[in-house]
Length: 394
Image (cartoon, rainbow, N blue to C red):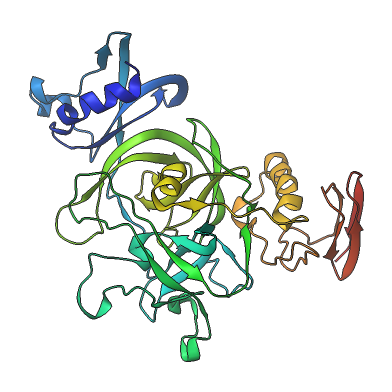
């Protein structure tokens, strides 16, 4: 039968138990350590002593199919809500050409979310974020979304200029309708037609070169308006959870989700693209104090008819420096929060904010195409197919 099929069979029975908020599949945790054995994960709002439960209210230790037994794993998942924001955080600067990972919002409204990245829809460039950021169809009255209304980067909360549409970057084209309290498969996703120059890059990550499925145990990076470019681990798949924040008193059920640990998304990260190296696997949309949640990117692309634009020619700053940064993090435990490069030009990258270069450094850089990079006021040519030594002192 397989665990995914077993999960669908057991979900109604498990959801009927007290404190259960959802289910999924993940790697079994034993003695505080993650094992390599898959388990059926039961998410609860709180763990309750067995003495307070009747025999019929206890989550079973194992579930069975014709292939054998799967252990269950009980995991606390509290206060899962869509990640809107009312607090300014990093990644909120004005950026042209437009790239993913930036603050974005519709009109002169409060709050801010993340422009995850750029796609082609019917051959036209569109920006992608969550519906609750730019297309909250459940809102009525003067703040209801209107197709064609302007989308701004940065959001007004982050200093966006609405006067004369100065920071307008696109026009709302629509999204998936989220049903408050809905129990069917929901997609919190929306898009807008881009009206300014853009690059197919994600701030702090680089070029997106493919679309793929998330894997249990996979290390991933997301670039969000509030958390910058930071890493986490795929801990759960096929997650079904009830999420608040969509209007009305009843949470909305989402299925087929990716659950992340080691990286708990912050308000304003909604819409961030979840990357496994240069492959897009998910789109962040919700979270709580225990984990973050992402939609499956392949499912979203199929649902909305998206395609990835061709990656840029040349090299992005991320592709040059992220491997170096990873080595520094592993060797000296450097703070991963400041790995975001703020300047983009794939033909001649300029570097203004490389945080760890206080005493100067020499780098060995390999690129796929001839280009150049300016460091410390000096422009260094980079030749394809050979090692390029660049260095400076501050």
